[in-house]
Length: 234
Image 1 (cartoon, one colour):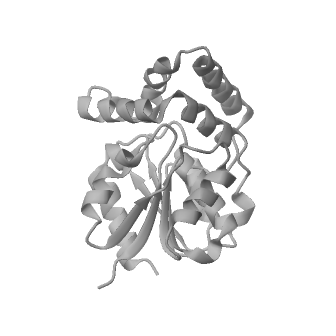
Image 2 (spheres, helix red, strand yellow):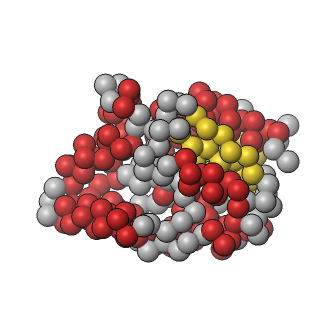
């Protein structure tokens, strides 16, 4: 059986480790490529860079910022995307409050306080019960350190200026999976419900006792859902 090409797009302050479990346990059915979101300061340029390096046709999965980039990939080249998975993300633009908070983090970073950013964000990113999970929190912190200050500012700038994607969703008919952690504080469940309802061919799956980083917090559940999506969604 031929493997499905699968492009996975990381979220803010994340790298390929965000997809570590999926890279290991979906390798029997998928040829996987993790998109580069470190070089550019707009979702348009991030999407173009990924498309330039992706297979001709592929399944596409994005978490959080990776979802914003995935929706831009769809705008640029919908004919290349076989299947879509949106994980802990939103099809809306930021609210004014979110924009204010984002600009504050950029300002903090520009004052040389980048190391303070991740501890500040961590309680919003993962389920409260996982705050003492050293392996999980270390992975999140190490990814952020690898991304670094300059790429963080570029990513935040891209997120701030992203377009609203809601009007685009009904035009996509590829088999789509929308996943959300029940306790996601960054992109609450209502946003995933909205995206799923707007997509023409979508299933919404909720992961219990899970925050914003489903692929890391509940890796077995997320991988199982993605396997079903790859193998069975039509």
